[in-house]
Length: 440
Image (cartoon, rainbow, N blue to C red; front, side):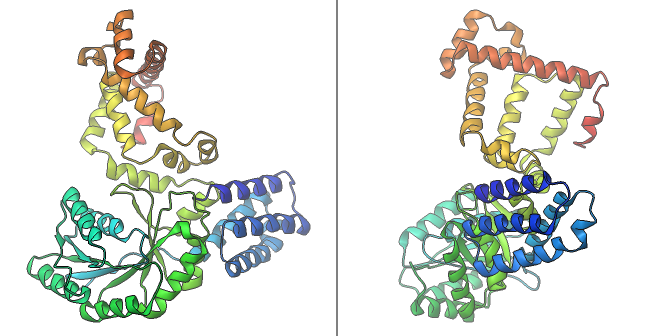
């Protein structure tokens, strides 16, 4: 989402780094580039003006002049000011006697229905018992879509006849939740192509009937500054408690994410980062600022890994690594575990120093390579996966034919795997043993 902005900011910082000591004019030239990069990323002009002025005031002062690494100090200031603009991290307020109601609102096409299911899955993993409510009778497909998502995730969905008004559906769902010991009710409300009085009056009635603990606007990050205007419109009528930005994994310029919190005063609580049900991240301003500046986001990567990987499987894998008994069966399993983290390009962007390198690769290159490697391993017999030394010429030709690859690709995989085994034998012999402590 922030590729262009990140590249331009990093280019600006590289220019400053070549200067050594920074004069006031050097800082002004750098900040001019920062201003242009932010405006091109569709950041609200008032936010850009305030942000750049705050950075300049600190950069021209003693913080940079006294620093031994002035360019790095400028980056630090930009990071801190970005975090300030993005606001404090804000969690859902679900305290008190249940069931608590979360009301999702937004324009048609912003992704409310999918987001309702993602949020329900997130809350279930947090220990809640969610109930999804189809409160959009104007789009029958919305009810069907929510019911399908509910079945896929094994989360119950409450729906009624299309003739029942949304406010009544919501009130009835709240009663159902209380009798069924559900702790959270998530309302998927109707949207329109644009804000109108009829829609707002309906949402106000739902709010009056069920007194939601959270009213979250689901905003499409791809709409840029329009998302800010939409948020202001909803906030003035409903009193939003939070924002959820969807399609953050797309090629949007990213300005909405930077502008929304500052312009509306409403905190961003979640980011939708993909199409899968688990592609939902809590919003942390410091982590987003680090991504924008190309500094990676290792904390989010660790959290993704902890939730995606099977701990018992990880323990067994560590033992195999220690004893150098890691085989192609294990390698295939690790590929599948890595795929759970999401697109590999996103994973690389979270690792400090690899974000820019990952953007130089074709978007589907790494995913395509992983699929071909897995196809090769799948075409082997269990015995061949356990002992690759069995693979003679005829077996390799059979594997290449079965996987839709070439014998050369099969050989390349085997060479890489043998190199990996050699490295693991070094670990098991004591060299590099400290590496294992990182995964405990």
